[in-house]
Image (spheres, protein in one colour):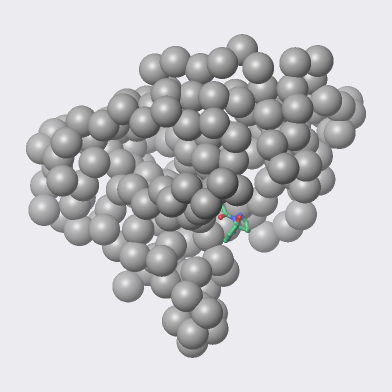
Length: 183
Ligand SMILES: O=CN(O)C[C@@H](CC1CCCC1)C(=O)N1NCCC[C@H]1C(=O)Nc1ccccn1
Ligand code: NI
């Protein structure tokens, strides 16, 4: 079972490397790891389990965050319109995106970053993702708003990009001209 001690913290170079594509079909071990990542998110959002194992609630997790430099992500959350997203994905790729940007008005955090980093994190408002899911199916997922933000945060981890890399250095709360908050 994945717990917080398995989560790699900033300063570890695995978080700034570009992760390797997973050769398909995935090995049993890769499938097992991705299932464990998804289970961690579910556990972290279960009050009793989270308290018992001192888990920080998370809505997404990328394999580099558990020290595995492979292109695997898991997401488990409901967006503001109560759409549910629960995926384990291999080799996720943004195949198209809006010009318009969005951001979370409260900024972002990261389970691998044990500090607050204030500022808006501009991201595409809409993205279409192509990936292979845990059952081995190729999926194409259209996302907007909060869901788009979560998936982009995770895919950034696969490219060694941390959320604070995207915060405007001169003015962390500058709003890009074609951006509006998603919440
Ligand atoms: O790469 C993946 N990560 O670093 C885990 C992050 C991913 C999200 C950050 C912004 C978009 C995706 C994460 O989930 N968090 N960031 C730090 C602490 C809070 C936590 C969070 O937002 N929790 C949450 C939110 C709503 C409902 C339940 N829990
Ligand atoms: Ni993160």
